[in-house]
Amino acid sequence: MVSQAKEDIAALLDCEPIEVIFTASGTEADNLALRGLYRSGTVLASPIEHPAVAEVLKTLPTRYLPVVDGAVVPDYQGESLITCMLANNETGALQPVDKLASYGVPLHVDAVQAVGHIPVSFRGLGATTLAFSAHKFGGPRVGVLLARRSPALTPLLLGGGQQRGIRPGTIDVAGAVATAAALKEACAEMATEQVRLAELRDRLLGRLRELGAVVHTPAASLPGHAHVSIPGALGDSLIMLLDMHGIAASTGSACSSGVNRASETLLAMGVPTDVARSALRFTLGYTTTEADVDHLIGVLPEVIAQAQAAGM
Ligand code: PLP
Image 1 (cartoon, rainbow, N blue to C red):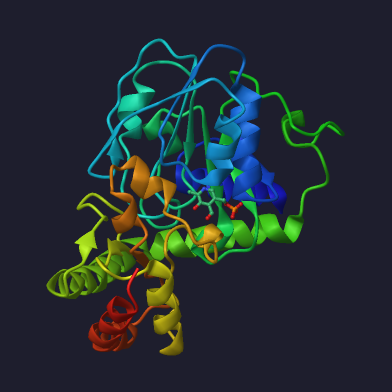
Image 2 (cartoon, protein in one colour):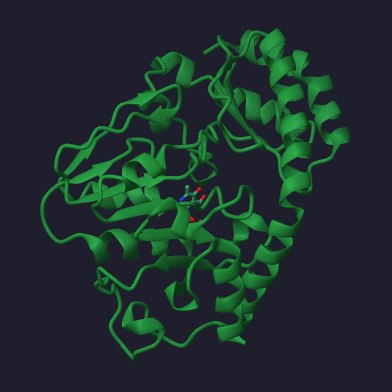
């Protein structure tokens, strides 16, 4: 059943079954890739990575690329390893990963936000390793690392020889099977879901613009992300007021909700600190209906007025 799951995943993501490595989370997959690929020299990285990558980079000599309109601007200066996400978790902005692959050095791609939402080809991207996480497309809390046979990854864990010795330990069979099943469904529904979500999201962004929002999500983005700032209102006030209407939003990355500080991603994009502290992120997914978006659009004027009255 594990072999079948690896075959199914490989067929959907254009890789070989042997390249599919199950992990406990996307975070583990990112750590395994970066720590496993790094040998010496400097890492070239985007400054808008998720903490699962960003915190590892703090332990390695790293040079960060500039960001324009939400996407990194590729510029290679002889680094030994490159890491860049396929789509940003806050803004949804797609990143020029194919250009980074063309430099011919090992490339790790964090595709946690992209897999199951937009077409992804491991071969086509030219990546050495690619991380994703099944809970982002309706699957279980299982991470996956796609890893080419060479260069060989140094494992984080030592043990039996499972999964080419890269990630030893007995595999969670139910998790592996459920990951493949969820990915199959997500890919089957992807084309229609992309159009449906983009329409809903664009309607929401249009209304937010009319209400004075600064939009951080660029045109080249995942279909369900809407990241904005509401000048004069604190992000935390906005999400608390929305919560009273039954609407779950975030000020930035979901993983750091509850922490009151400006998003590192927005700051790296050159957004001023006060505007970054007014950030409000909506993520639409397969459970989001037109009625949900209508409800949100209906309460926005009142919520924004109340949050602005409370001030910064
Ligand atoms: N990378 C990105 C871009 C993410 O959005 C996330 C989770 O939100 C992760 C990595 C971490 O994945 P996991 O929650 O499975 O550890």
